[in-house]
Length: 181
Ligand SMILES: Cc1cc2nc3c(=O)[nH]c(=O)nc-3n(C[C@H](O)[C@H](O)[C@H](O)COP(=O)(O)O)c2cc1C
View 1 (spheres, protein in one colour):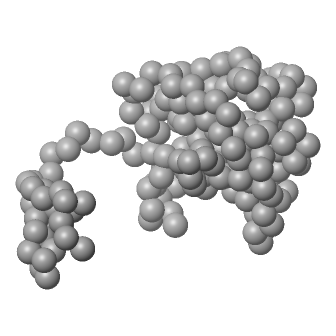
View 2 (view 1 turned 90 degrees about the horizontal axis):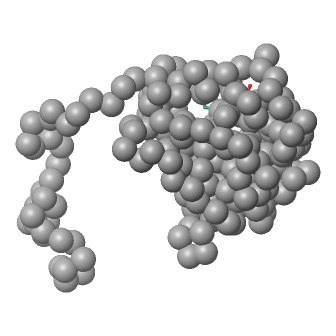
């Protein structure tokens, strides 16, 4: 999966001395109606026990100037509690979890289901609040163990397959939902 680029988040739970944060990219937008969001957290991560106790979490979508936060919150040596809250610098959200100041957005959830999944736990949350930050900033990207920057689209016009060879339409000019199935 290191060959698969993702965005980067810091998932948080708990307030004050009970605050925990952890860098995570195994996060999924699961459903729009109702709004459901899922995070996958290692069973031994401090955040795992905290989400189980708090029954809530916040997912902070990091921007391209927050590589430091990603590195800090993926370090086993990092502090929990108020020190973590201060490092994140965004105060607290609606569910009481710390937010990352300067992030692109924060998605706050209350836990609906907890699924054991090997050495990870899947926490499925109902989204109760979404806060957007500076959405003009680019996202932090993780790929092959590093943080590459996204370049402006300088690709040639026709890269990859745009034609459906059976039905003969070009996805660049045709809207698939207007076509007969
Ligand atoms: C970019 C990135 C994404 C990560 N995604 C996850 C993830 O989705 N789930 C997870 O459990 N650990 C993930 N990790 C690893 C944890 O952040 C790291 O192991 C952390 O130290 C675990 O918390 P702990 O120190 O309390 O055990 C990720 C690390 C990085 C650098």
